[in-house]
Image 1: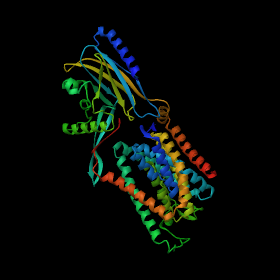
Image 2: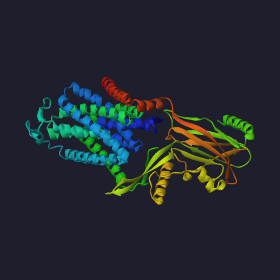
Image 3: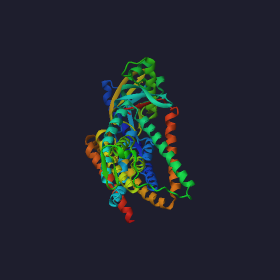
Image 4: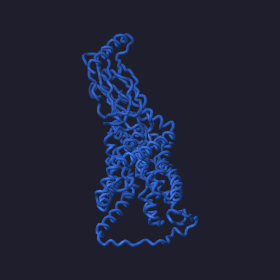
Amino acid sequence: MQVYLPIAEVSVDAFLLLGLGAFVGFLGGLFGVGGGFLMTPALILIGIPPAVAVASGANQIVASSISGAISQWRNGNVDGRMGLVLLVAGMAGTILGVVIFRLLQRAGQIDIVIQFSYVILLGAVGAMMTLEAGRTLLRRRSATRSQGKLHQHFWVHRWPLRMRFRRSKLYISAIPPAAIGFIVGIMTAIMGIGGGFIMVPAMIYLFGMPTLTVVGTSQFQIVFVTAATTLLLAATTHTVDVVLAILLIVGGVIGAQVGTRAGQLMRGEYLRGLLALMVLAMAVRLAYDLFATPADLFSITGGR
Amino acid sequence: MRPRAAILLAAAALALSASGARGQQIIADLSRHLVAITTGFAGAEVLLFGAVDGDGDVIVTVRGPDDDVVVRQKSQVNGMWINTQSVTFAGVPGYYAVAATKPLDEIVTNPVAEREQIGAARLRLVPEANIPPDRAETFRRALLRNMERTGLFQARTAPVRFLGQRLFRADIVFPANVPIGRYTVNVYLVRGGQVVSAATTPLLVSKIGLSAEIFDFAQDRGISYGIIAVAFAGLAGWAASRVFQRG
């Protein structure tokens, strides 16, 4: 069934979009990731203009991350103060990201920047995950985990503007969290991702936050930054396609539930290894497009 | 469709005999003057029908609304293919199609085709900036090639069919990605390589219904649109988690 997307101005099979939403939602439920980093490039591959893919993708992430954020908040896993610092910086980053997006769009470089960013991002994330999954599989028997020190001092503890984050049991400078939030905000606006897979390791390894609080706080941050991005892009570039977003959301919520259940039946390290390979495959595909000689060296924009 | 087309053609013949006295040797009309882009839109076909007075060949051109188009050229920078040069063309039709009773070069002389811009290759496409003619030609060809690939310029000349001596019909095909706006449909009666009579009829491509309302809302009240989009996403996500928790 063909459906005309009023903002993207293309006609796409509705079941293809539902299926894509369900597939990404399924992966999200299975692996516990937002999936924005898979959704946006997939939308671009099926012919949605990149600007619309990014904006509508951000809108879809609001739906896919809100239920997790609510339950995390109820369980007291959200560090409100940390969340606020990330959020304020994230909003500033989003605004800058939207400005950068428009400048690149005018210069005709937006597609290449999005593609290149995804190659770097997916390549790095995929490689790290593959290594991690491989290591876990090899060392499954010798389960010796070094206990983290309660009072480890990282470099971030010595910077100025120190704040007390009670729930995270931290007394660190507000600059590094603000910087991370800011960078994720820019990436949300340009790439249409939630950024959880950047924030989570940063908060664990750079700040030394407890893992439970990290997951809760990043979920909280993602809801608000993607909501802000949707709002900003809707107001400035008019690229949020609600018909597209609704189809992805409907597919996504169903897929996520199935994925969560399936995830409980499969072993974690195999799942992570599988996701890692998929992420790498996507990176290779996008890199190929970037480096292979295009079929036509010329392209057109505007006027359509 | 067939009986309806026959009625339309009969009407055209009658109208022509009425107008024939004023020297109009070709007339034409469309089965509809509005192509509505609705939520289920996946392209459209419009029937053009008409009548001629006397013999000759018929050419039909359909031209969409003009707009600026930027043509970009990629070149390799550090192994990556990046847009490095661009040329802007003003007044490029967003859609172009041509139909004729015979191949174009058999029925019309080149100067006439150039003057009337018959055939996508003869559209007057001039770059805005001053660039060497060979570069301009390279970019013009690239523009044509890309428009043909998206289906918005139709490279092939579609058939115009005569039904008997005077009546003719042609089907105009619009792909799903047609731009909205005012279109111009020109019909030419050609005899001995020259245009002896011509007529014009307008056509409107417009978003209608839900898709139009969504588009206008997004353009005119972006902030409210954004708030609704976010609110819907939030509610849907929340509701889904509640429903599935119970189940």
